[in-house]
Amino acid sequence: MAPKKNGFSAFLLHCKNEELKNGRNINMKDLVDELEPIWKDMNDEKKNVYKKMAAELNARQTKAHTPQQIERLHENSDDYWMMQTYVEKMFQFIPDNDQLLKRKFMLLHINCHAHDGEQYYFPAEISALEFSLLKGVTRMYHKIIGISKIYPKGFAGGMREHSDKFHQISCWDEHSDNYNEILLELLSFLKDGQVFNSDLVEGKLDLPYMFTIETESGSNMMNAKSSLETLYSTVFPEHTSERYKSLFKMGSVERLFNEILKRFNIHLDERYIRSGMTIHDILESDIYGHGLGCMYHELKEIAYKCSKSRILQWMSNMCKHIHDYTGLELIPGRHVAVLLRDGSRMIIENEEVPLTRTDLKMKSLTEYIDYQEDF
Ligand SMILES: [Zn+2]
Image (cartoon, rainbow, N blue to C red):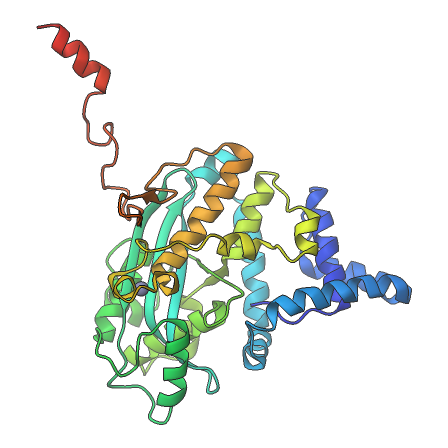
């Protein structure tokens, strides 16, 4: 979630974009140090250009973000800087584009049982997806979680308002609520190996970064992290908060996408930034119709609100954008959805599922013809 922009932050954004174009990878903190004196000396006429730009950007954002959310982002700004540094570092250790294509990344979207006023977040729907640019989706996790027995009394009204608006998973309905089992299942998926309670008691578990949307109404990076921490502390109330705060490492999918674009030398056109068409807009564009959501949301015909369809959409949008500039090969059903006869869409959620004749170890069609001709 982006804080409100002022003239200086718009100037900063503009310059950061220029730096990227020139292939200079400067971190935000250094850039701020460099630009502050320039901003101070700038005349009002020039400053107004950036103030206007900031106002345009804010106009697009105000609908999406409440003051509480903005406050919360600032509270977590240390985490935010750390994450940004981490994502940049991670890319420094990917030696070449070949390795980048093979590298697996984890995407995450959480719809929350939430009371925004009270800053209370508990997962209602968790979707996670592992993918690589080379293969598309490799593994996927999805769960709807109930809270009817434990939600804080007095929060029901606010929680209902939130669920009506964002995902329609009611806090009163019964869904899976064996939290220990759910937690272990999620952690096992993230680790790609069985996780036991004893691993958590010892505190040795090292999970990959999970990339989720930074700026979105209803769910964002900090709420997602907070909801996972609440789930954890419900299972292990005796563990200290340091334990679970370092366990769930959240990254911004916008940052991830930006780093990938930089590596492929695809730079965002300046005019997109001016008109507010950002990386975020590319990620969120082309919301899929039915077919990509979970059964619960498909039946309610609101697949576009489903966590599952959201992360599939981000992955597809990233791959399609990269494909447009680099010729990255897109495999239907793996990177992008296949359109089915009834108009719905489908992506295979596990790389082990065979899709092509080669996957099925079948002979190619021409070989069959040759075979027939032999007789
Ligand atoms: Zn769903």
